Every structure is written in C-alpha cells, then in structure tokens.
Length: 257
Image 1: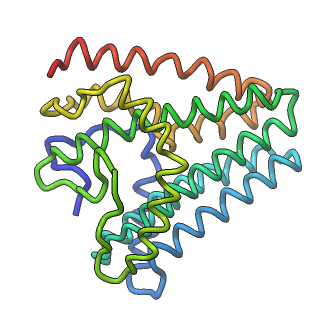
Image 2 (image 1 turned 135 degrees about the vertical axis):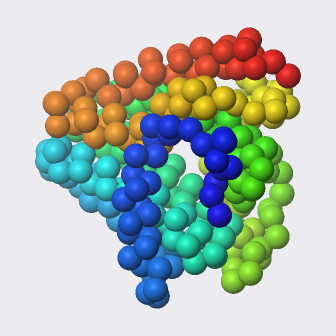
C-alpha cells in the first residue's frame, strides 16, 4: 500500500532515502528480518554517527546520519512489502527519532561552544518543524483516496492492536509517544487549528513543507558537519523555525477552509 494516491504524490525533499530504502526492503522481504529489526538498525546507525561526532570524524558522522535516514525509510517499506502494518513499529520509530534528535543536539553542544540552553531551544525548534511537516502530511494521507491511514490527524487514545502485535505493547508505546510528542502536537494544532478541514494540499506546497521533514533536517546537519560548521548548526535551526509562520500563513491565505 502506498502512503498516498498517485495524484497526491509530491517531491518530498526529506524522503531522499526512499529508493535505497525500497532496495533494502526488497532484499529483506524473504528473510526473518522484521520492520522492528530495521528500526533498531537505524537506531544503531544514529548512535554510530553520535560516536563519530564525539571523536571528530565529521565526514563519517554525516555518512551515518544519511544512512540512518535511508534505513529509516526501509522499515516502513518492509512492512508494506510483507503486509505487516504495525502500530508498535510506527510508535517505536517515532520514539527512536526524538531520542536520537536529542542526542544529536546534545552531542553537538558538548563538542562545540554552544550553550545548553540554546541547544535545548534548537531541539524544541527542530521538533516543531518536524511536527508541522507530519501534521500536514498526515492530513494529506488521510484525505488521499487509497492512501495509508495508519497515522491519525488527532490521536487521543491508544489504537486497537493490529494482527501480530499485542495490545499491551501498543498501549505502552502510545503512552510514551504522547508524552514526548504531545506538547509539540498541541502547539502546531493551535497555530493552525483548521488545517484538517482543507480538502487537499497541492503538490508544490507539500514539497515546500518537506524541508521540515526529518530526513531533510538530518541532511542539513550531515552537510554542515564536514564543512566544519558545527558551531552554526544550533543557531541555524533556531532561525530556520521562523519559516513555520510563513508556511502556516500561506496555508491560511491560499488554501482557505
């Protein structure tokens, strides 16, 4: 199952790892590897990238950050190939992402002259950016005929477990998910309360929004590290957040409810 119907597909700048992710998923489709195993693997890649930053191997760190994005695309692809959608996998993926984001920024803080408070602000900013992207993307997916509806626009209660997963695992991961993402979701929903009423978003708009996708955010970091711009990563993402208001303004002005 595709995430979007053909007419709703757009150039997702954050999803550059998808072709390689599909290739990896196809290699694993007849093996015992599950999407959860692949999710764990991208976590390992992220931790290796963090070790490389600590040791000053910035080029290698960038490679493993990009590799993390590629593997991140593979778990969902493998779930679709094997027809094994999973809420456990979806929530685990998201929880790993926010943990790795926090570790990336605290590691950058540790090896640079950036203050901890500025770093925490940048972490909040990058999460708000990603939340805006996910908010609009999930709205589009839920309105797309034949699209993937595993993700919901508003998630207030734990979903019913799908075949092959336990309800207890889903409930626990949903609770963790709501704790770590809940405040960011509320902020973005407050800034654009009626976005879900829009019939659809045009492809060009979603392409612009995709600059806030996690893959594109990590690509920026992966490029800045070997360029010895580590001191500028944190302030960049703080300033980068201002574009949120531009995108929301365009949505409210051009795509009225």
